[in-house]
Every structure is written in structure tokens, then in C-alpha cells.
Image (cartoon, rainbow, N blue to C red; front, side, top):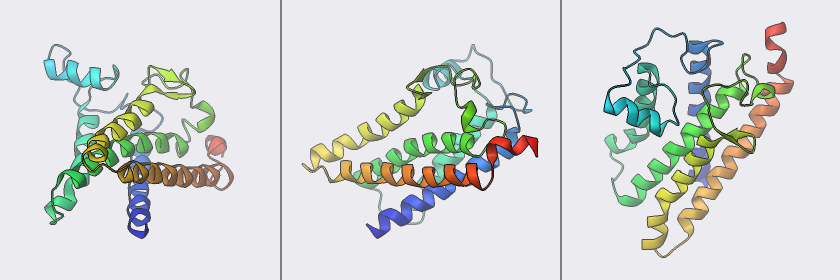
Length: 195
């Protein structure tokens, strides 16, 4: 359990730092709207595939690079000698998809231009589909992270990996709630632009 908490907190801090970095880079413009970044032409098959996977969001060099960078970070333990086996790698992939959702949401928690009171479809044009107050992509990322783990549960004839997934989700929720409280009452993020 101790290792789970340490890993979870570390990944949360990584998501937090990347969210803040992205807020600093993008400023008041979401999805790299005004960044001087590569924007590939729609005729390319890989661009159409990327946009389909990203729920219609524009492919940008900035986002492709950021997602690749994060993917490489998640694979770093294998470079340092962690044994590459099915269980480790499926957990890594599950963490990666949870991380993408967490990182994106923390961008809103800490962004004075898009505070949580504006976490709605009418303010966030790049998340095109919403369900129950959140972008559909969030549900998709979390479901995909769980589906990735199902072969482990099946082949090991054990639900321990599903329990591991739930423990991580609950820890991320608790950490996020603490950060939301901090952003509201300490940072006063909703009134940041008025200061």
C-alpha cells in the first residue's frame, strides 16, 4: 500500500506541474489556439486518425509533442531496469490514460482564465461532447484505463488489479479535492484576474 501511495502522489504531482506549465504556455487560449505551433493538413491519414482519437480536436505539434513526452516519461522506469512484463506494462498504460484525464482537469482547477465555474461546454470549445458535467473524453480515458487491465484480472483469475485501479482513482479524487479547496480558498482562483 505504501508503494501505491508514493507512486500515486508522484504521478499527481507530475500532472499538477504539467498542468501549470501548460497554463503558463497557453495563457488564456485553450488547445494551443494562439501558439506558433505546427498544424498539419487535414488530408493526411494520420491527422484524421489523431483527430478521430481526440474527439475532433485539432492536431497540433504542441499537443503531439506533449503527449509523446508524457508517454516517454511513463516508460522511463523500463529504461532504468524495471522488468518489462505484461502486468507492469498494462498498469503503466492504465496510469497513462488516467494521467491524461487528471492532467487535463488540473489545468482547469488551476487556470485563472478557465476556473471551475467555467468548466462547462459553452466556455470550453475544444471539448466538443459533454456528459454529466464533464467532457466525454474523461469517461473514455478512465474506461480505457480499466479495460486495459481486464486481461490481467482474467489471466490471473484475480480482481486485485481492479482493486489497485480503484485505489488509485480514489486517491487521485482525494488529491484533486484538496487541490480544488486550495485553489478556491488560498489562491482564490475564481477572482485571480480581478486582482
